[in-house]
Amino acid sequence: MKTCAFITLGCKVNQYETQAIRESLTAKGFIEIAPEQSADLYVINTCTVTSVSDEKSRQYIKMARRKNPGATVVVTGCYAEADAEAIKNMEGVDFVITKAEEAQLAEIVSRGTVHRAPAQERIMHLGKKESIYNLTISQFAGHTRAFLKIEDGCDMYCSYCIIPYVRGGIKSRRPQDILEEARRLIDNGYKEIILTGIHLGAYGKDTQGSYRLLDIIQMLSNLSGLERLRLSSIEVNEITHDLIDLVAYTKQISPHFHIPLQSGDDFILKRMNRKYTSSQYLEVLYSIRSKIDSPSFTTDVIVGFPGEQDEHFENTINLCKKAGFSRMHIFPFSAREGTPAAKMSDHCHPQAIKKRKALLDAVAKTLAFSYKKRFLNTYAEVLVETGRDPKTNKLCGYSERYIKVLFDGPDTIKNSIVSVRIEDITPSFATGTLQ
Image (cartoon, rainbow, N blue to C red; front, side):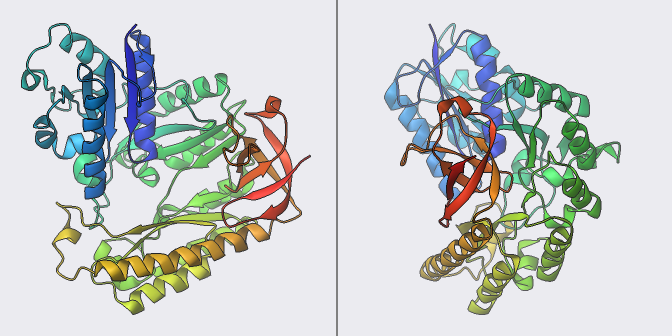
């Protein structure tokens, strides 16, 4: 039997694409094992969002080769798109495969390993000839909730981000293909689907208005058997009144919005090439709150962007407090070669960045605790994960508002939505009693 192992770095879209590759290789007779074991084939789906991501990708490539010197090592993902030549020059890499070629990965590997030629002759980088949506999924290994990729590419060109250069412009998936994949996932037992993409809110932009994100959400929310639909991330200037109304009046759609902030200061937002102001950001949150009871707002923030002074950072803290985020992902700025931000001359001192991150981490914990506190002695609808919490051995899952809830109960209710009375909270999770 041929064995394969997968290492995935980066975003939810990469996780989706790894799952698609996993299914194509399984269909060819491969058996998946853990990446810590000695596999016949390693597929490393890389990330290139920061230079740290590049380094991690290189480390995993070397690790795979050490685990089995005779294995076939395939590298794909954003780092492979951004710097294929650097990966080609790494010892032990057999294939560098573009995003467009992932649909043919199983065929490429099968052909290339029949006669093992010298490494440089086995490098594949054929160009973007095939649709990025030739790969589809029917399950999501290791996940209770399934991601469904409906869009690829980005045209925002934020000054710190390399992704538009790597993945290209907006490419929207056909509604009928999305619907078909969603039905397969539902038929295979998934109660919750998370719509994902590189620039989700731009879905349909390349179709000249033929279809929009709103159309896809409406279509999927009507599917029989789908109990919960969630958006992975959406830009604040792409949240329309129609979308707010749809979430407010459609039971299946979770009242949870992940809206990247990046900075709460208008000067820094302009340098980042973000397309909104701090006041516009807050206005959208107020609009959502006017229609939806206690919506959950999660976000991403970058601290220490070039030119950020103490007063700019203070504006970010103040905006975060006004927003009342339930969860924050805080990233210290890391210069990405090839982006405008990397060329800026006024980079912050590393110690200042470290201090600001610690301060914002403390604010984030306070806000998370405050948000969860309002749900004490109320009931949450929780989708029970298939794995128990490793520290407490309790059942765990996420509510419709993306609150992690731990509670006692039988294994028979895994992968079902149950009612739990919230009785205690921490900044990270809530605990309660199964009803």
